[in-house]
Length: 452
Image 1 (tube, rainbow, N blue to C red):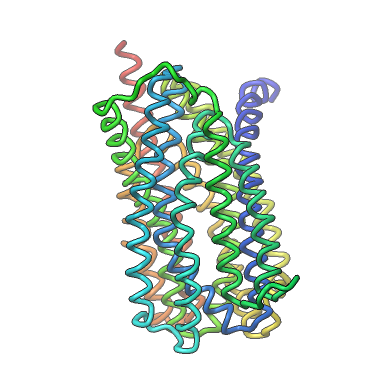
Image 2: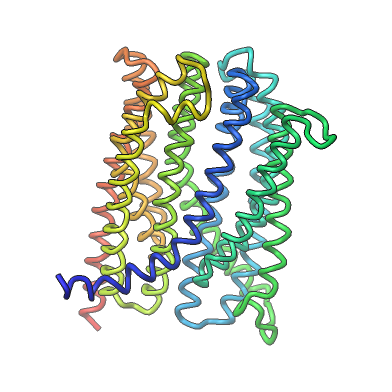
């Protein structure tokens, strides 16, 4: 036991050091999202459902953009692991260039989604409010992609505290803005639901500005004796896009499965949509905790991969799995014990509370699968392996999970709860496929190492 502890303790400590700021920042973001829903919920069930629909649609371009930006971290981590200062400077310029282009493209996607909202068979009572709220929060995609450029650059350098600091600052601004603009405090206009949208936009603009100012002084990105060449710059941009597109599709496929589920629930009832929004907020809380460990794992694996030390890659991977397993036990037990009380934090509607409580039971069922597939995907991301995992994710969610959800809800007769039953199936299959992919990569690495 002592030998086991000595072997894994350095990995526990380093993964925790890198992951803790990410977790704090992401928990802060989730907390703000929950506070948003609580405040909007005070306005009424219709406003909560309208916000749920708009946020669900906005998540489509937002999540893809976040996944695309994640490509920067392993590339920076590998360059940092090799002490390649020249490549780091090119990656800094390339990160901002590619994310700016992606922000423009995602803005066009938001415009198209806005036009399509009335045709998505949602309750007529929420369409008008949803469209206006969506038009406000869509503006935040540009500052958010600028922020993500700096965030992924700094995390690739093993600096996860910077993004945490900026995010927490923005969270405070967002909560204060919600209180002031939703309810018309301190002489501000009472904007109701739309006040939450303007508050989000203001907070994200501040995130972009502050992060950019910090990145300008972050070493070793400040090397001034290296001149940028067009050829090298284009090569760097291509490498980011080549890795970023499949990573974006990977993250998008997983998240959009939940989004499509929300849309299908809207076909059944606005009560189900409100309950779905509540449980998604709780689900995201656990997801972000596991994602924080995953972020630390990606950073470590990318640096070990650059140094070509497969033994350390395996040890760091095992340590991450052990950490999230303990987290799953704690989080799942908490959700299960408090499943009747947690929905009451968001609404006093008895029907919504009852349905959300049932959905939480299904949420507990797939927590372990979710955590395992997150760590697997983080390891693969650190090894700059994105295309195959992206394909496996699409198969798991859109080939299996979503069709199963549709069958369970409409043919199986389980209604809104049936849609949630597809998640344990999709997440479990995805985790299994990632396991096989990682085993193959380890075998290939071992063969290469033994042949040298």
